[in-house]
Image 1 (cartoon, helix red, strand yellow):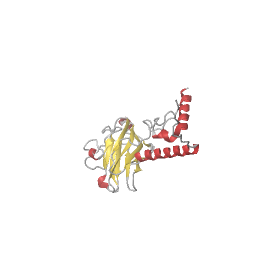
Image 2: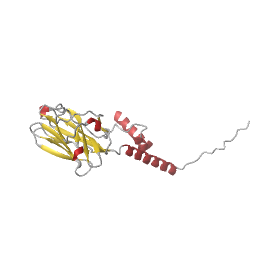
Image 3: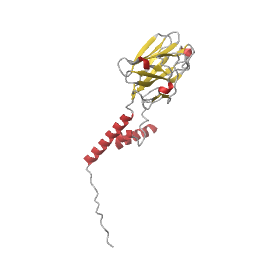
Image 4: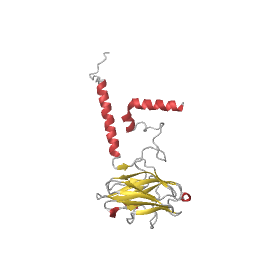
Length: 232
């Protein structure tokens, strides 16, 4: 019985061409990853502290010159947020009740037009022991502002010290979306701990993700080796 030789031939690809394919694949993956997050503008860690017995006001920039929000604290225990956009009629804060108190949102809550009532450009987070922000811990302020291209929605992550510490607080970070886009509280934060610390040495992208495609097999092997050394 004769063995028929296959007419198909194995295609040989040079090492340099494989490198080119891998590089192009990584670049495509990174471009796709960036485009998915293109609508979220993240501040990076801010960590601005507002001490318990000090009068302090600080401004934080948003999308365009003239768009910003301010946080303030005074020695009477009032913690306040204000939001300002070029087209000020669209500025608003996610409110706790009909009075001027800001809601304390949980991570993952959607911030979009349906959650806002009448426009309100300032609100207390806490005053003495009144308001949603009087307990210690982390929460999110939801806000909207208009720079002329439509309303943009965002969040600010704040850690409160509690009303027994005169409502001192720290702004950890903030983010906002492009005009007309909804955003979830905490969306855009890099993989990190509750306090906004950098990714630990033991953490890496999920295996099989676009991040590992960009890193490549060599990077994955090195990361695995570093984890084994830490574990031992």
